[in-house]
Image (cartoon, rainbow, N blue to C red):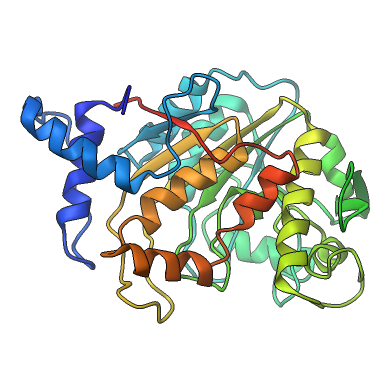
Length: 339
């Protein structure tokens, strides 16, 4: 596989050979060069694991670093080369009170560089079902004024983002404050064995960007705005893809997409699953590609192909297929390490 450095290959081999639940490997800067024979052996492993990687120059680029730290986050953002325009929103999830979340200190150097505002939308359940409770959750989880400003997008109303040619959605509804931002950086704490659906960039652009009624709109496949309702899984997943495309179109060529693959503890009963060792960070200008790369890295830790297929089916990873069909991006990607 072209362009994957010896550091990346060595790191992947270590993760593949380690037992589930092993302690995360420490990021080092002084690893010796990988011998040619070892590179050849590891290449076969990575080809099998990163099953959607390609050498096609037309495929979207996904950057990778093993350094899941504030410095690594800032470096991978800069390496993408997309300079923000105007007011910058940093779309994250403030998560649940006291629950796992992105480390605010990890985000601060990037926030300072772009002078960004942390943005999120209200949810279905308390305390994040209203702006007051949501802001308190954010502050309690460490997103204080010293870290950076916070904006709940639907605090003062909603707006509709048009969906072009959707099978289910006519619009993607988010908070009215979304109109105030010229550029957006999506940063996700990638979730594997956590909820029913895996948590990545596509979710951040759809369900997590949506206002409360917008969430109902997506879950129902465009049939409901006032209550949680899912007629069937495929309509929901297709609607996620359509909403993600609408979010991109609203800020065309002004998005950056980053998945942090660290702290991926197990919260479900998937066969053979346990805490996955920290992998690093992947970033791209293509939201489908960055999610597919993260899926390949994380679900590729399964001991067998059968187990991997079961994990992916349970956690609805086929949403990347529907997102590609909706025009949100490409599943096949080129990967390049910045280490």
